[in-house]
Image (cartoon, rainbow, N blue to C red; front, top):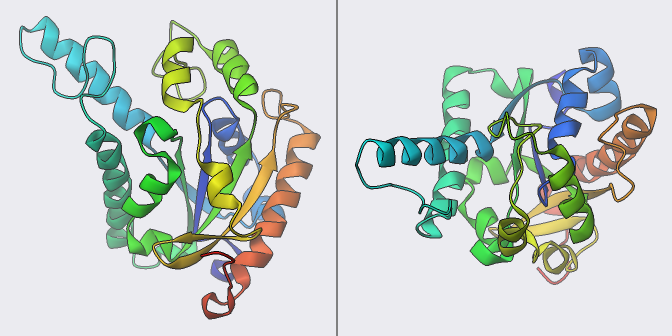
Length: 250
């Protein structure tokens, strides 16, 4: 099975684009079918949302205790852009621990890494430069493409104020979403080459999952078929030996 699947799949997009719903769909797909259709075996997730949400919870608790907040101000904004970098460092650390604890990790698992980034805090380019080399050398990128308007709609629709820490039900106020995520650098990065991103001097394969029509909120055959098509394209690029990959403009 180790030769039939992605080692690392980086799943990125604007908030609300459908990343978490895609992961949930994969969780409910039987293993043999998941490998055959999507080239994903047993998988483990690394998502920076639970990490940053823990910081917000700790800051509220510290404030209630009469101590200074550590990571965010009272409006829930990070005290510095370096904390976005720290989240990527944490992702890389968590990945290295998985490799440490499982000598046969690549044979058994696909790691799915999920995050969103906007230009306001450096965009995907800044995040890519912080990923560890062991991730970059093993990963493929799936970008879930939606417009800003669709991101805003989905963010509003999914938010459950009773469960703001939920992977599938969290959301941001409109103003904060616009500030952090309306402007993205994805198109600039992808414009250099139709198949590969230049990351840390490495050609990393990518594919785009179009989701403007929202096939992820109510997952069904349309989601499976579209995901299979996108990951099949990505798999073909992923199998190309690294030395044979050319990156236009990279």
